[in-house]
Amino acid sequence: MADSDSTRTEVDRRVAPADAFGAIANETRLAILRALWEAPERPVSFSELRASVGMRDSAQFNYHLRQLTDHFVRKTDEGYSLRAAGKGVVRALVVGTFTEDPRRDPFPVGSDCVHCGEPLHAHYADESLTVDCTACERVHSRHPFPPGGLFGRDDDALLDAYERWVRGQYALVAAGICPVCGSELRTELVTDTDRFSEDGTASACRFPEYDTVVLATCDRCIRRVGATVGMRLLSASAVAEFYRDHGLDLATIPYWELPWAVSDRHTTVLNDDGGTTDPWRVCVTIPLDDEVLRVTLDRDFDIVSTDRLGQEPV
Image (cartoon, rainbow, N blue to C red; front, side):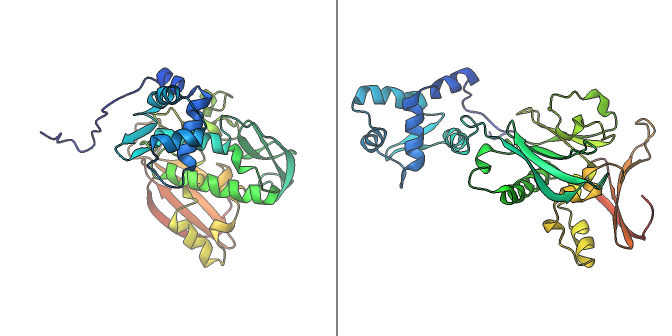
């Protein structure tokens, strides 16, 4: 009988992490995965795959192929093709996650700090790109970005790709989807950021200038993403419409130029008396020209109301 709980997922076979990594810790096996990735048509026959890898010993080749079959490689009557795990390994190799450690020295961003007005700079190290102000030391953005994204791009193209990448990541987070593994995220509002260390596990939460952040946690891949409440509104249609009414396209404005997105001074927690008031609300005020858009979100970070007001000091 089928399980009546539609949210339940059956796992037919689970491979121990040590066994999975052990299976690909071999140049021949990595070559097999790469050959399947680059094959013009799949499935690929045994003989064609062996020829692509360039291995004469059929028995030896068959041994290595068997170590990959089921978890990384799918075998059918027609031949062999990559499973999702196999594609993931090759993608990691292609983008340089396992093999590259590029760096890019600080370069001007072309935007000014939303706090002190001094020019912003960006640099890349440890597989993350950082946009910050060297004058007041405020970090406007720091987010993991694949090493492969640096190659073939000048500074401007890199910043554009990075900005679009981060927007896409946060759009997934706002939808409750882990940008790494696709699992469901557990989200909480954190107003005590001192409990986060400087080890980078909580992303924006580790920056001392933030007092109020949204922390999204994936219990499956242990990914934690912290951000201001404003960052969750970058893909909100009500905010985009507000900017459009003022003749601006929100999608074309780098988010580090938006004070309500890269600081929490425009964020207010309402009806919060230590957790005894339910429901609490969190409000983000977005000033633009002679207007202010006030966006109110509930405990699930869904927008419950938007109000347009005359310009007010924030």
